Image (cartoon, rainbow, N blue to C red; front, side, top):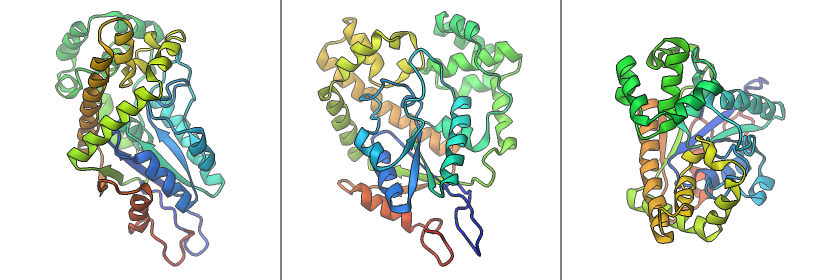
Length: 325
């Protein structure tokens, strides 16, 4: 739980925020849904791709039925023609949490975008907003050229950045050019901001490697059965291929490449499985490095309700005399 309190003691009304993270396919969304129903909460999606309208199947976006059961926030808040970044997420997430608390509900932040959790909890330092003209110029530049510039001007960031993630590389170079300051220096300012005052740690779901792999494979196969290829075909006419951020969503880029003749249907499915496993590994690495997470084991076949029960039994959120739960 993000340490924003949440208990009423002696008449005090202390708002509650619970953070639930983990790799893709660990079952976060289902657990958050069960937890929200148990605690009287609403869910704030912490997912950099679910913000886009139309990216439904490939992002495992909550269904209409699930959203009818529990109110969700920060889903379908951007068009494919728009940019969306951590700064916008943090602003919208804080607004959503404030509204949730005004209704006397529990805010459950759930997702796998570690940078968005960090932005919500700690702020974004003095990094400037994206510059449309410069961003377009950088997106057109060869990645080797951008990495070379980053290595020369900001070796600290170059040493730790995900060099296979164009969006991160472009942003780091963009900040360099706009401010003349190294991206690593501005990120270091985050710890001093403490936008999420009192935030200490949060929960993360973890599964045994074989179990997670099986869940990823089943999830990817299910997405293709439900019509991922047709979804991508429709989205290409709405600007999907031109949105560098949305094209980072696992599955969408690979299907676009398939539609361009680069992969067969079978190769595409297997490639998406591989990319999803790689992404899950990166998510866990990021969380272990950058966040103080209280990990919760999920057993093979264990229900979302069972895992939600484990969370509800944790000391920070269990029922105690004087609590409002």
